[in-house]
Image 1 (cartoon, rainbow over the protein chains, first blue to last red):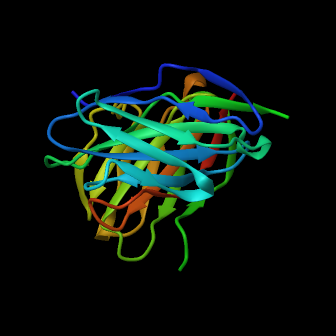
Image 2 (cartoon, rainbow over the protein chains, first blue to last red; image 1 turned 30 degrees about the horizontal axis):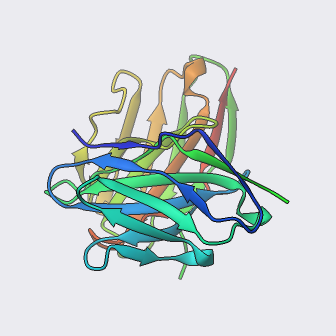
Length: 114
Length: 113
C-alpha cells in the first residue's frame, strides 16, 4: 500500500540556520515525490518534485530535496532559513505503476525564530 | 493561464443537510482529484478521475459522499447528509500529465453545525 510519513509534527530552527523537514515513503515501483507548502488561510503551493534523474532536486524559494532510494526518503532542505519560511509543509508521493494516485503526509509545521 | 476554480469558497450548513461543491480544472488537465483537508492535517484523497472515469474512490464514504465528472471537464462533489465530522476544506486539484505537479484550487471550506 502507498504511504507517506512525516515523522515530525513541528520543526524549530533559528533564522540563518539550515533546516531539514523529513519525509519517508512507501510505494510500488518507482515513486514520483513532491513537496508543497501551505501558509495560513492559503492554498497549497508546489515547491519541487522528483521524477527521475539527479537525486538532488532544487525548487522554489531556495528549497531543495534529496531523493534516497535505499532509505526511501525525500527530505526537504534549505541552507539558510528565513522567518518567512514558517509554514506547514507537506510531502506527497504518486504511484507510477498505473493509477497515479497521489497521497499526502500529515504535514510538518516549520517555525523559524528570528 | 486560468487556475483551478472552485465554488463556493465557504459554506455553513446544519448536520443532516446536503451540500455540493464545484470544481473546474485547468483546461486540458485530464486527471482531477478531490481531497478533504481537516484543520491541521494533511489532505486526504477522496476520489480521482481520469477524464470522466473514476480511477480511485477507495477513501470516499460512499454512504454520504458522491462525485461526478460528466464530460470529463468540471466536477461536482456532494455530501448528503452531512455530519459534524465533515467540517473541512475540500480541495480540488488537477495535473497536466502523470509526472506533473498538482495544481490546487483555493478550496471550499465547509462548516457543519
